[in-house]
Length: 234
Image 1: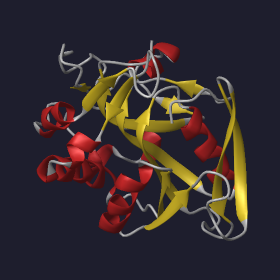
Image 2 (image 1 turned 90 degrees about the vertical axis):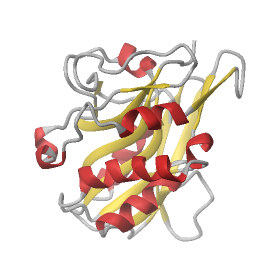
Image 3 (image 1 turned 120 degrees about the vertical axis):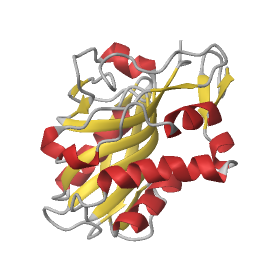
Image 4 (image 1 turned 90 degrees about the horizontal axis):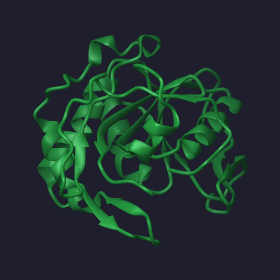
């Protein structure tokens, strides 16, 4: 999440016109990503004016200079303390992905584990944890990816996914898209059909890196974001 990696990425700006006013209090700004036709999500579109978005953005706290100087950390624990808002966020994901024939939801360690299992249960899919090295006890398939100052790795149990199963990847935030790219590569190497990536928050840095009209995409896969944060790494 939020690291540099080798991937082919383009960007969508949510609803195309920056809907949702930027705020000075460091909270996220409500912006909804548009659906991608290839993902067959046209019947599950969340309206850009959905009133739940403002409550979700208001519930996310931005903590300056954490975990290091210059980082504006998007803290979702404040959202988790508000059950109604937490449910709204989950419901918006479920409404989008129910009926899309998704067989598995893959959650990226660690905050992808907060949203992924609940989404999987609601849409009748299995949940696959994508973990950091040496966290899984069985035989694993690994994907190493390049960070700005080094490398990292994601692992998945061998046999967790079957060939051509439709998979949704879930994380809490996308900054540069590095970890999502690694997750896509890992799952595709295992034979999965990655339908889309879903994130609660998208950082403006991602938009600045990949300024292309109308679409967020990583490795050719759509990225669906509920809200865009005003504050980001400088």
